[in-house]
Length: 187
Image 1 (cartoon, rainbow, N blue to C red):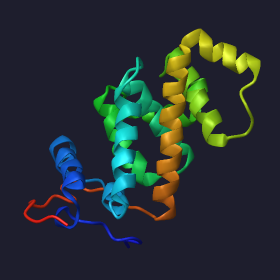
Image 2: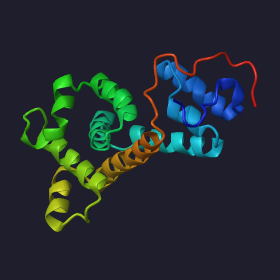
Image 3: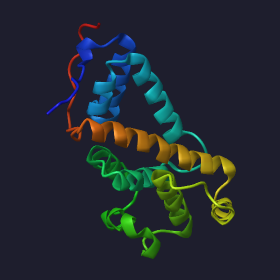
């Protein structure tokens, strides 16, 4: 059941419609979350800009950020984000076995030391238990630059936000073709 309505292409401004069109071209759908957030176009526009900056800029590969996003979403039991970002992680080369091993990555041979370090950071950020201690920070800095640590924290932090938003609304995973409609009229 949809808790907050999702706006269609014909119900949004031209600027939001351009976001919809871009996602239809890239993914073949407009994510349910985006069509829900479209009730506040300014929030959607800044959300998209922030997400694209987090995922597509910096020096870390997007694949590692996707791995961190999947682990964050697993910890938060967010089926909505897991559905799309597990697929994206696979497109970036991670296997089903690696995704299944994420809850126990520390004991797994499926991941590099660098990946494990990134995943530990995502778990620490998601649990929000306490600040990093000096040893944890030294370990991070042995594998990542300070800018890359910011990238990893931004990816996990952004998806902690997205996970909570989607979980609270019981958002169901977006299906192929969802939100695809002709653009003929605009709000």
